[in-house]
Length: 397
Ligand code: UDP
Image (cartoon, rainbow, N blue to C red; front, side, top):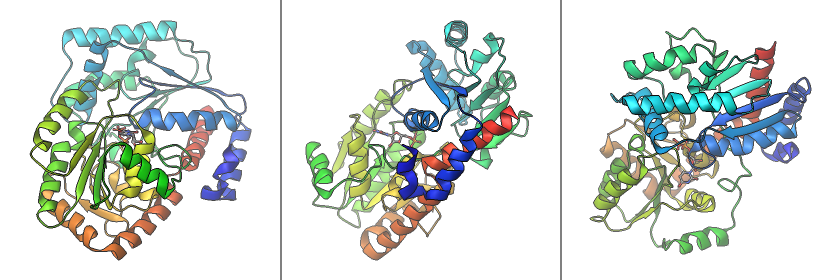
């Protein structure tokens, strides 16, 4: 399985992975998050866990199952860590700790290393007498967390042997725990990223009633305020004043994100006044793939962003991206080289860049080529696997 990646990552990268894995054969690694579907973390684990097993580790993945109150608590923590002044109420807090305590007592933790993803299962560590190292892998934009939530969660984070974040910008000075920066990555063989024939692309667009008569502008993101879906509509409104185009917003609902339906309803209300807007909430990874390939321009207008896998996904397909310079996005978009960066909320600048790209096919193609190469060098799953193996060596001494 790992050898399939030679074509994209090169033989040296594979040899390095195999050599790093040699000392870790049979090592039991458990990943814990809170959903098998929806959002970037689940997608990445779907590729990373089988690859870890393929190179000889004994990797597992389990999910913290919860009730709606758990996810309303953890979405508030998510929002607060990204800087919003919200905090779970008493009942939500008590469910948060109760579910984690139950999980910590009854989940099978017979492992040599535990990797906890994001705030949902974070406090489980408090309820265990652990013998193995635990790593907290935070995928959230921690550039300016709300103080109250951060102070509540910090004592739990301090119990971890190491923290992993996606960008240097998320290191916290008041967190003495050893921190590693390991950006996420995409799998070129997943349904989201694999090669598609022109017929497959056309077929997918036709299936969802999306005509290819006008250039497509696409944002693929959960309907989440941090992805600024209303801003996407506003940019499209301004683009239409200068060019013909269609907008497709694709966002499935993640089971651990309770805010999606309300935000989608708001978007739908505003989109009704605009022609040529297609909103899709279906879960269909081949549609993600087809749209990122068919698009003239991909937008990612997040106001906060841990990484934004959708950006690398589009770049990998040779599609230029107009995105906000927040969180992990500037690691991926090099302004003027493989896309354009804009300031969040500067809809005129974003619309201007989109129009520039719509009018200049050569520019789109040259930025697209640079984007593919940038992702190939930095954001393929093989690089992520290598980083994890090095990190595990470091942790286990
Ligand atoms: N995604 C998807 N279907 C959708 C919307 C998103 O499969 O309708 C995928 C998207 O292609 C990406 C992941 O979900 O792989 C979202 O990751 P990202 O880092 O962009 O954002 P997150 O949801 O983790 O904040």
